[in-house]
Length: 79
Image 1: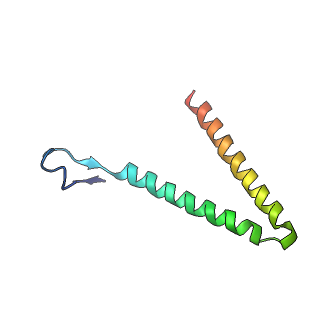
Image 2: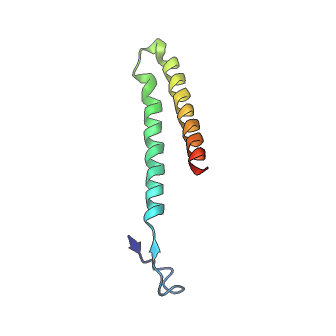
């Protein structure tokens, strides 16, 4: 999807700007923030009160493990 920007029309009269990748990245970023926040809020509420703290700790633990393993796998993917 090529989008022509009005403020660049004076400087670049012949070039089009491709905004599909930045828009996709921003939408994925915002969606992941929202979904992660909702899951971190709802996980302790889904169990009994005396297990709520443990559920919160376990959900944060698995979030951290998932982020770390994703980073490591991505690092090996580049190599």
